Length: 235
Length: 264
Image (cartoon, rainbow over all chains, first blue to last red):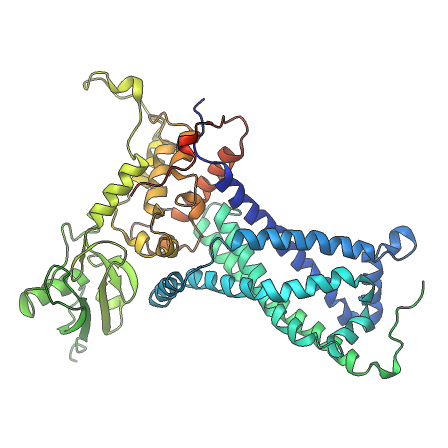
């Protein structure tokens, strides 16, 4: 068998970028639904919180589980960011060349990549703040505590921008992953691509709606907190 | 009933000849009356015959198989000879394909880049033992379906549209482009080529090769021959990751390969 002279590293980097991206995107697919449980009422959200704290497994709350999950997510987040940054234009010259190409070309998938660059860059900051807060204050997640953080803690502007960034980035990313690795090509890969793009658009719309509705609900709970016990019920 | 009045096409051409001292890039506008079944090939010849004999552009076959007349048509790469004016708005902007060496006006030296790419990727059958045999020997039979599949990829005319539509190559000029990756996919299919996956990894297993592709799919969407570029690049990516991560493919430890720079 012939020997490999080239480095194996590029293969690892490419694979790992896609793998971390896939895991993060799938996490977001779940995250926004779980957080949207508030739309079914504070009790549903409370149950969701208890579930992730292992209450139904151990009979008592262990917020440390959430911390552990946040650590795993932040590792994926940092690895994915480090690998993705290789692709981001790093000089003004590169940026200008790409932007000119994109404008002249008017090609949707080329422009979608720029959306990935912009949203990804924004999430270096927005995502870091959010993940760190969840990591260090896992016991402060709940229908009323989260609402308090959103309103009194002034998190709603950050969550609002983060919602758009993360939903766009995750679903455009999933669409691009499928094309990149040739998943779901079927018999006619061009037709599959059209279908996947439609699914991507629909998913973006649905998730932004769910996200906005749940953020709105937290805000409205947060504004009416005065008469409500904020602390979690002791169990 | 009179025939509908033919459209007056406004053709804006980005003109510049780097070989003419003092020439500067500028736009020349020509007005042409549209005719039925008119292609940009006809338009450009009309301009050269009746308006400006100095206009430079390339044509050979006027049938979409020579790959000479690639240009930016309203910003999108395409072949002038197979583009009907009826599919375009009244105002048509023409510019040379970017990235390639400019000869003048709409004429670019894409052949030079293509030759470099072909040499770099060694786009020919590697068949050591049988190379020395007589030229008169009968070729081994090939499964017709496989032959068809190879032929499908062999339809590439090296027009350069995929390169001009590639966002990756804009930022990394050493990228091999869809045209290069398609050729590797073609030789990889061919049972006459004895190269292994590890050999192909040497050629495209880095960020100038398949791992550089950012899947923007400009190539796929502009290819005038409708080659299955998206699908073939995805295939190569899977194969090259498999090869790169395969521990059974022995890594050579010779130091001189570590820092090997891509050749232009």
